[in-house]
Image 1 (cartoon, protein in one colour):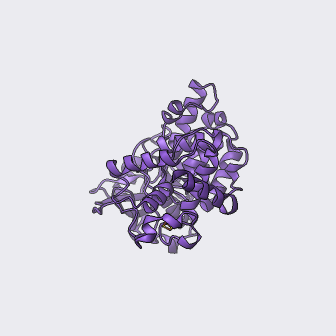
Image 2: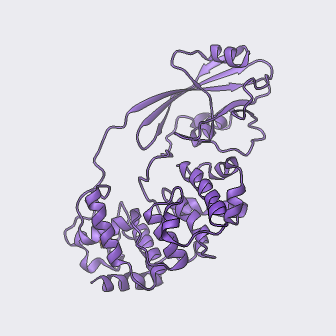
Image 3: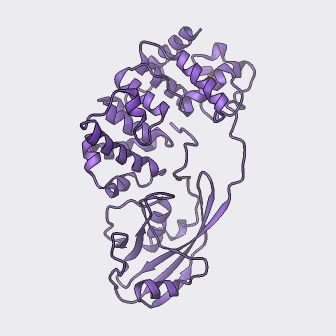
Length: 371
Ligand code: SF4
């Protein structure tokens, strides 16, 4: 049965799979790795320009390892889930220092790199080296859950164990790279989350979900839970030259390592902050409408406080943590999307958009594999 499933998927892939994605040319483990990380939460069409820019800047893994983290985050700005970029940079350093600058080819070495789990390690080695490893990304989970009628949320350990066993049993000894890409493509383009196109599916004849009309129910969704609401008051300080004060976030936590606005304590006024931290006097203050930003584990309500100050103070807290940012000639730094929007608002380019919805770009776990 598994052989028949595989041959139908492979035949479909020949005619309908994706064969000309940028990372499919010159399939080095390094290029496949970067593409797999970028694709974890993001659709192909979004990833392509980011991937090409990334490769133009860092053609080899050692280029990535030697680059400043800020440069990496800058090239990642807008893709979200910034832990991915930080882990890529850390892993590149490990490859340079422990593997002589060559991407390792042993599964245990790959899966031990920062930010690489079992499925990603399997995908890299299967796609780039044709090694026999199963993968279980969101697309493969969806196809297997529906085709085999697997009940239960795939995040539950027992369900996941069953799916891994199934993925392993289906993965062929030969044509592993093609099969791996085919399953990703099948999930992304036919067995889609919202509207699966069962009439175009190569494995529809024995699909359990289709025969029972349960495509919409499988895979079972994550059990619902309330996300707590957190509050943040961001301080948008501009000096007489129009520069904006930014602070680098701690390396861990939300927006870790990115540049953002300083945050006010709950009982602190903007005037007191600029006086105490910059020795400056506020010439005007205004409070902008609240923004909402969804993270995996919580919702963040951001209240921006715009403060203009006189003169052009130097940085009194000079330790690489603070930056006077000039929106007219932006520095190459990594900023979270919400910060970019507020900077655009300050520059007068985007005042009307500051209240619009944002996509999740938390550093939490993968929620959707959106290829
Ligand atoms: S028949 Fe439909 S539900 Fe079943 S695997 Fe194919 S696309 Fe998915």
